[in-house]
Every structure is written in structure tokens, then in C-alpha cells.
Length: 308
Image (cartoon, rainbow, N blue to C red; front, side, top):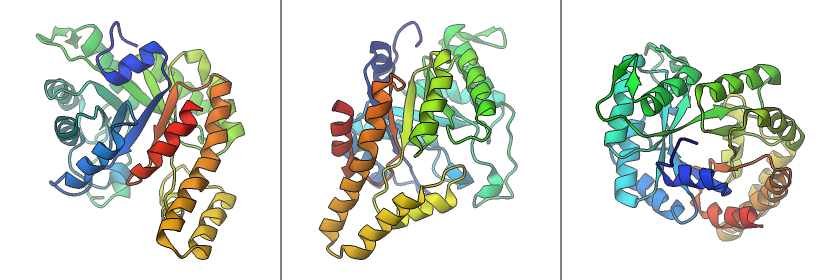
């Protein structure tokens, strides 16, 4: 981590606490009341929550603005997701200073899903930087208090993280990317969702040499429809057939809504408890990043797993 923690998340990682982060996904709206409700429900359980930046290239409310509003309204610390897809280096540098002025202290460096995937495919992607050079830019502005050799009068203070994908094939190319991000100054990694324990152990063992704290990405699924949609539409991730079959069985065999919810909650608990416990025992994790969007009721069960 940096010389001193600037945030609750930074402090937790610096102390070696097993941290939990959540995820908030503001939509195509200027009204954040639903997101704020979820943030309040999540707040007692997490160190911080990511705020997404037009995932899948689908335009949503600006992540920096949403992060500021969520922090102001709920007190929940945010991890501002910042992609290199939409803005050049000059614009991003200005946004980093603006994010600091708005009270943000955590930023996640992302490439961003290509605009061709989303609902405005005619939009021109920028990609002036990549996710590694964005990490380097943040560290330059924070640590050197300058940009391109020019002093910043009141420099920003941020902890900067990056993404990692254990599902990447070939894995070796992804390992090299993680090395670049570590060398650039990434202070934590959040992984893509992964379901294969053996592959996860292999991946986390390989990147342990970079000495960057890793938060395992998990996606508890609150219904069969969510599980099927995640498997079908999210690039780079596939839900194992046996899990899909179990979730489908819950949908088919349980008619009572309350019992069905409880069954989905228990199924998630049964899957993720041994998964997380095994990785904790091996010393491969600094925490968990839970992408249970619109599924805040799972956090009490998740805390049971983490504290076990």
C-alpha cells in the first residue's frame, strides 16, 4: 500500500485484515435512490463497494458522480471504477483530480468493455492508455505529486487497484499482464468471477510472487434467471453446468417464494463456503470482492463464511 492509508479499504489491507468489498451497478438514470437503498443495506458488512462504469459498454450514469453521491448519502466508502475506454490521458488526469476533490479515495483501473458490445456501438472508443498505464498515472500523481513532470499544487490521494482474470486462456499471458500492473504500482487486485477451485489455486499461486493483495471475485446468484443470463451474456465467464442444473432445480421444484429465496441463499452458501475457506487456508487471499448486484440479502451469510 501507499505510505499511509487514505481510506477504510486501504487501512484494512495495510493491517492485513481479510476484507470484503461489494459492487453497486447504477443504471441508465439520474435517480440513484435504488442504488442508495442497496448501499445502505450493504454498508454494515463491507469495507467498500465498487461503483461500475458502463459495464458491457452500456451507457449508465457516470461512475465518478455516482460514487460521490453514494458516499455522501450513505457513508459507504466507494471504489470508483475508471475505464480507459472513453477518455484520453488528459481527460483522465483531470478526472483523477476531480475525483479526489469529491472525496473519493479508491480507484479501480479497468480497460472497459468495447463500445461495440453496448447500446451505443457508434461511439468511438479511445484507449489512449491501457489499464497498466492508468495505474502508473495514478501512482505518478499521488506519489510524485506531478504529471508529465509538472507539479500538482494540491495532489490527489488514492489507492489504486486493478483487475485480474483467472479464467484467461492462456493463463501465462494474464500472469504477465498482472506483472505489468504490479510493476506500475497496483495496490490490490480484484479478480473476475471464477468457479474452478483448481484453476483458481494455480492462478493465485502464480501471481503470489508479485506481492499484491488479491480479492477473489465471486458472484452469488439469487435466481436461475440471473445464473443463466450471467453464463450467457458476460464475456470470459461460464457457470458450471452442475451449478446451473442445481439453480434450475430450485426454480422448478420450489413454488413458495420465501422458501425459494432461502434455497438460493443456502445453495450459494454451500458452494462458496468451502471455496473461500480452502483459499484462505492456503494464504492466497487478502479478501473477497462480491459482485452480488441487487442481492444484498446474501451479505450476512457471506460474513459467516469469511469469519469461519
